[in-house]
Length: 119
Image (cartoon, rainbow, N blue to C red; front, side):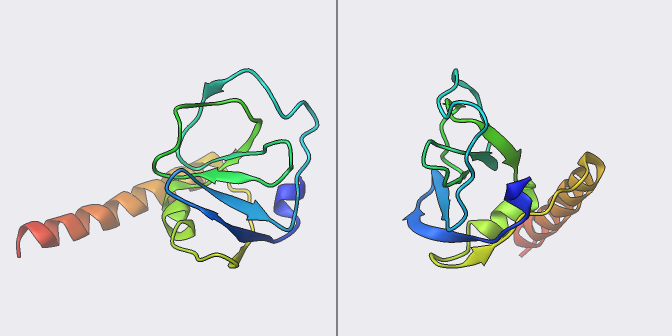
């Protein structure tokens, strides 16, 4: 999968809806316009120009571009803090690893939340 083989760069098109990636176009094997379907935060969509978009906090609820992967939520919070021009790459993980990362992330969030409550 080309998504995993090269580095991407974060473009200047960054906002709370999504993060456009450049310097490594991924051309879908099917049409870039598909029937709209539900999408989630962290989904990676590929529009017609091949430059992937990682959906962020204020993403739409449906989308019509092919989805090729989803960023693990704990990593998404790191990704959205990167600046324009930052380079990144993707790594495939098994579902059980992604779930463990998610629950570890929740533990950190709950720990911070408890510290704030008891200040």
